[in-house]
Image (tube, rainbow, N blue to C red; front, side, top):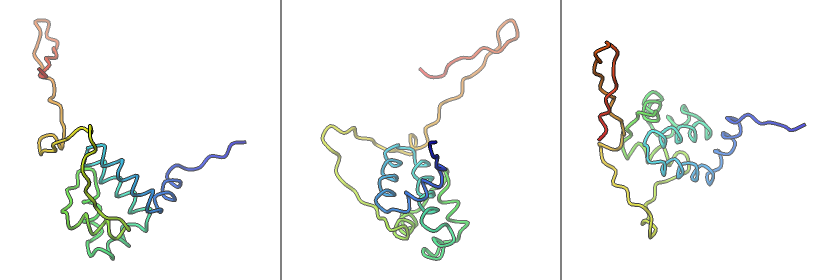
Length: 134
């Protein structure tokens, strides 16, 4: 009989390892969506002792940490560095590899949203979708 393991328990165990956690966060960062990185960092924090321990280590309140590490969080660089340091990690910057696509993150594409389709009313009284994407 094949044994199964709870996914969350498995990830907590793996994320306790600094090398695995670093790779996990790199993959989340490469996704390009800021919320993905913050939620991944939150999982790392939970695996490495939790928010209460992190609050003691960083001097930030638990409430501030929960807000910061939410999908819509917007941490200051100093907070991000403190959270990473308390988790046994740090930020680093490296040059792009030749042929790697250059991204220019801006405020407008950091939170990509699609325009909702406008509606008009047909003669029959039913709404008709009109695409706003040209």
